[in-house]
Length: 415
Ligand code: GDP
Image (cartoon, rainbow, N blue to C red; front, side):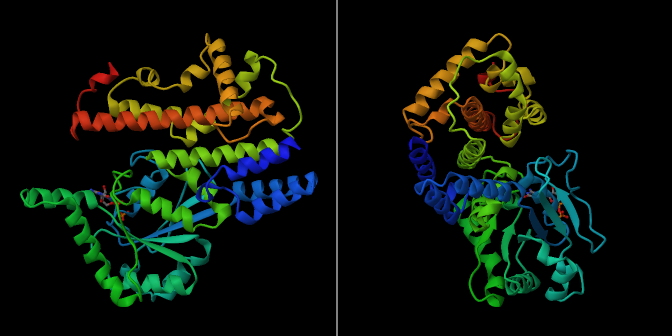
């Protein structure tokens, strides 16, 4: 059957690390398809979708007050320090209670700010018990200087509970800045980073049996240093069913992360399409305005996943010192729904279908469900949002390069 081989081709098209279903689930679906057991295949897809959408994710962030926990929690969620729902930064902790920070776009994701173990009289085991360790998916242990013996003891206790932990050293930007100021002639970024890494692992090495990986980050520059590496590592270590929601929760500020999000979303809408019987032949017959408007909401959701929602655009425009409308001129998505632009949307869709049929996107070759409007429209949306997110990223880089860190006027390419 055409759709059967297309489904196979679709799954084979994504690399292992960007698949949203486990290998076992994919094999199971393929097996059912091979034996022509459509109902079984559908039921596996249905359950898998439910699993990945509803998977709760709880991330514990622990460290002494002042190390940058709150700033890290905001950075990983993509929440500005002054936004609503931001973890308050620069305040001294006085209680031993944990504080939950729900993700603004994904209610299933919560980051927990845990008071540092150093300021308590708890043993690592008691501390973990007090903090309800079994509720988290993993622990981030934060320090803004060297790690201490109690950080290492805590990590040891976490592993005894068969859970994962990650050491994150914050304020790397500060460190580099200070080194450069104090030793302008001999300053070498790589050497400074190497030295920090070495200093950080010393105490840990003595207590833990191996030398743990340490992620050097700046909470203000999340596309730099080890922030993207940390995100990738967390993604890789998570159980399959949690990866989708974690990826969506990240504030993607690298091209790789945006593309990964694009892959995840495409698989998701593909599975949704299969679930809703997209292989039925529903031919593509023109596109009327009303139908497009219904899809507005879906598209807004995708925009929000890629940080292109209205609130985010307002913030970006403010950073660039331009109006939101001027910013939108550099993006393609506003034109998808432009009042007088029906023709161009249709044209875009036609081009898209051609590209899909040529097997460039998704390797879907030949199956009838291309013609299911909402499926390929969603693909158009995902691509539009992802491409815009990448375009913005490039503009930001260019912007930084041109103007240096202290910017007061917009760069000329905006004019
Ligand atoms: P918490 O008490 O551990 O939650 O620490 P906060 O997040 O409140 O941060 C304490 C101070 O360090 C604040 O003034 C932050 O702006 C600053 N800070 C946090 N992370 C970084 C970072 O990566 N780089 C720099 N330069 N400052 C940071």
